[in-house]
Image (cartoon, rainbow, N blue to C red; front, top):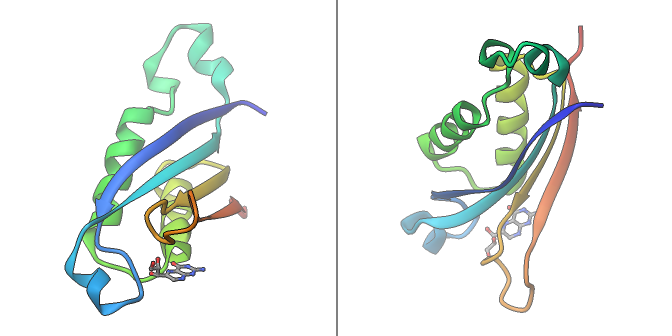
Length: 118
Ligand SMILES: Nc1nc2c(c(=O)[nH]1)N=C([C@H](O)[C@@H](O)CO)CN2
């Protein structure tokens, strides 16, 4: 399967269950794998057929910072839905990392895989 991959996209946003978390920005780091047919773009060196990782990254930062949510699970679903509906990505794996969340852990994360139904 061909993929376009975005690693460790940093998003500073209001995220968390507790009251004190609703007053501050915290950093999330997103790892995203998107199924995409690379051959079409590569054949003619054609950006029009490429899934632009820069456009995707900027849209996801906009989406996540739009409104505060409590759970990283919600962020993962929002990202997967956006990629499938707005960018026509047929299959996606989204990992949302919140490394600052638990003092004794290097990182905590959720990971989801979603496929477009057609
Ligand atoms: N499965 C989850 N568990 C927890 C979450 C979460 O988003 N998903 N969030 C919190 C708090 O916001 C935590 O990050 C504060 O340190 C607790 N558990």
